[in-house]
Length: 214
Image (cartoon, rainbow, N blue to C red; front, side, top):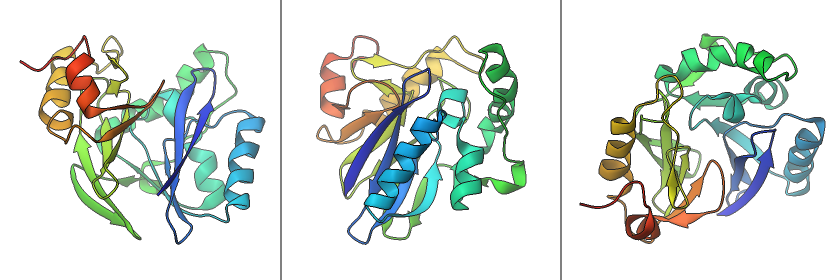
């Protein structure tokens, strides 16, 4: 599996394009905002001759979700998120205005494919979805067991964790999500977070100062 990172928008969010040997691709999060960011994504997909099958949303805060509408319009792909986060997605119109960003359009609820915790398969991609609340309602982590990688959004970072002072944030839920879901994965699993550098489950269990193993 090939992984390409795009760091986008004023919030410096990590967006990922993952692809397999059949040139099938999935997008992780949709933070593409500026014209330059959209062109970089389009050029990469064209250059690699990738066929985008879906976009998986770790959570619909504005930095991770501002590009959802455009992705759907351009590529006509499934947008997958947890239904508990849809109200947060609706709020990004007002949030964009507060930050002086361009007007944001959102997809209506009937255009979103809602998913819950469990196993899903998209073409040749086998994915285990974890429901990981705490940073925000509707937070999901996407684990690819065959590749030993996980995309954690803003739940778990390199020696840090997601903020819980936003609306629907909850510290106890965040700690529980990390301890009972993520820290139960093998130590070798590589972590691709929503911001910052990659890490591993083993490293975080040993070095993360916020969530320690009892």
